[in-house]
Length: 381
Image (cartoon, rainbow, N blue to C red; front, side):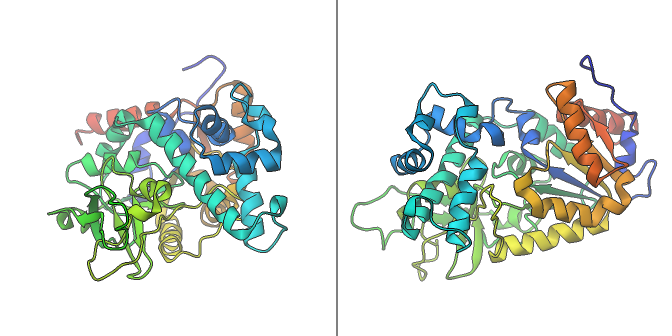
């Protein structure tokens, strides 16, 4: 354990029915869960800084930021604290698009929509650049120790690290809590002048056996980089492993049309930005949130991993409070603060919602190792 931290004693086996009645356990995953495998992945305060520092922002987005916040925020040598927060940028745009505030800089609705698309695409690129083609070691180990039928994962993350870990376990697990029509893959390159007749995605042979099962739901509240939604069919298709279909659509919308030959509708990404004007009217997201609330209500334990309950996530914070504030002794918070001061601040924030929760500051990897060791000692593995 690092100096300055004192972790309370927790019977890890209780998460699987040792000291508590056997029942459902819900794990709520924030960006810190992914960071256990990829320490350099940017968090909220660092995200726009990383996007601008690495050149992941397109010209339209750069021009928008320079006009609204001043050209100094684009300087390559600027520090994170000299740039706007990404949730503030999203809120400026979303408040205007919803009609609740004037347009920043008098921008047209079309410009705001494009700036927002580029902003989400930049987030996806920053995440993809950090993760690369690697598969998360901690996520894979976590996926292997989760019991089917008694576990639900709820995630605020776009990335597909946990998705891949579940897909790689045996038996393979693909379960987003909402119906998935097909697992598809991209084929063929863009042919100039023939956008309307080319279908760049086709079903993956044999994938129905995978997507029709999965005993561990992964409920992604903000959408996912591998989700492709056809508005005409009202169906959700997905890509598997490292194929981030939504990122392709954000970068080049003309590349993504519904795989059905009789349907000419472009696919749409399903992604919600970190904004105080977060909107979840989309049918897939609405159904995901409904499933998440039901899972929380039915759970005997809630384990919150790598999540700091940011202000922009007021809807998620409210859902967690509705379902577990009155039984906060069943809540465990797994985190890894940088300093004792950070730990005190984060613990105070959680204690206001969950006064009797248990706080584990040794991080996700340590937590996963404890679960694995506990199962091995009981002869489960």
